[in-house]
Amino acid sequence: MKTVITFGVAAVLSLSTALRASDQIPAPPQARPIAIVGADIFPVDAPPIPGGTIIFDKGRIVALGRNVQPPADAELIDAKGKRVYPGLFDPVSDLGLVEISAVRQSVDTAETGSINPNVRAETAINPDSEHIPVARSNGVLLTVVAPTGGVISGSSAVIQLDGWTYEDLTVKAPAAIHMNWPAMRPQTRRFGPAEPDAEQNRRRDEQLEQINKTFDNARAYKRARESNASATPHDSRWHAMLPMLSGEIPLVVNANDVMQIQAAVAFAQRQKVRLIIDGGYDATLCAELLKKHNVPVIIAGTHRLPQRRGDGYDDAFTLPRRLSEAGVKFVIGSMDRFNGNYRNLPYNAATAATFGLPPGDALAAITLGVAELYGVADRVGSLTVGKDATLFIASGDIFEVPTQVEAAFIQGRKIDLSDKQKMLYRKYQIKFEQLKNAPRP
Image (cartoon, rainbow, N blue to C red; front, side, top):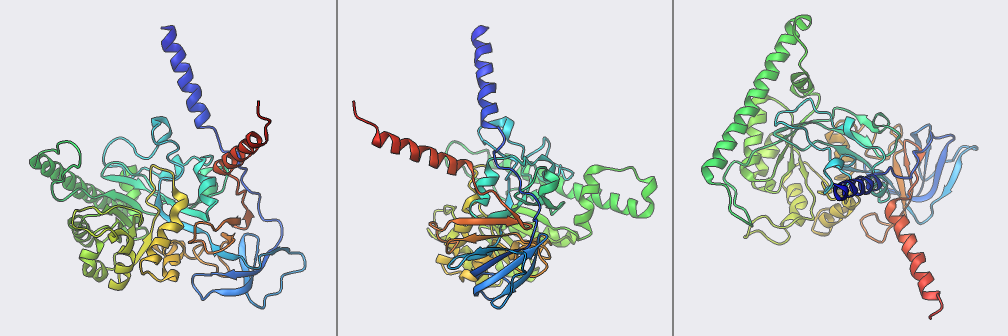
């Protein structure tokens, strides 16, 4: 018993150490105008401005251009030879919902059950996550945090990566309803025996029936509310679906296989809801269908392996270019759920640019394109007068790994760019310098 108690105490202490809050303090509101002078500015919604100036005050951009005069009381930042970008925007992530994927107590991505449209991701976000400072150290200042479990997972939220509470972080909620489309054909497993085809088909049919029944119930609830709201008991599940049914927010369906994508598009057309495909590995195989119905695709990262034996080694790398050529709207994600590498978002876009996508389009796919997808382009996504001053200064091209983010601002607030990885780098740099200079015995 003593051994068991000792082990339990050690486990709790270890977990509490791993899950302690990050040391970064959220930034205070912007106190006076700030002018970034001499930088190459990349507005995204307009051509780059070489050697330009951008001015923001009270959290909003007030001017940018080559012949802009900063106000007398402005804080001047000399950024000659640097670049200014809008905050990078990851279109789907679990940032703040997962701290250590191997530690169950730190994972809050899903609720029990398969039909949970009433789950709200923003309420589960940990504002003190160590992953947040790491992500923004590489220019990722915005993301859409989404639940992942079951068939209908719940609603996502657009968040900015600075704040004391989830309310401070939230830019828009709900942003979308998220669904996992069932596999339409039996799947094989790389390792170990797969379930019999008949069992997989039975489960698929059961899930499709659940989806149809859920939408039928939600529509019946909508009609009842419209007819007599006071006499209709509130149901949190169906109420959460009303903004999607009325077209205010989209339905984001996770689907990679061509048959999944086709089935999801057909379902969305029957239900008359605005659809976004998340994943989209086979999207080019049904590009005409997606284009016809104006269905955009969230490409779940370019850093993934071919899914089938006959696929080209670079199929994932060229997917953005092929969708662009086919006229299908798309954005690019980090594909880093459950491993914490949200900071790699710009490199996923860089890979797309290396394999044929124009660099300007690649940048838009991780900034303005995402903002347009979720209806927040009036606030973020580009460097435009009147929008939030959510931006960063980089030492060079953000698509290049050696480039460093030297300063970042969220709604004009200057962000602390220290993080756990930088702290460990400095720690062990000092350690090995000391060992190198220590006298030998």
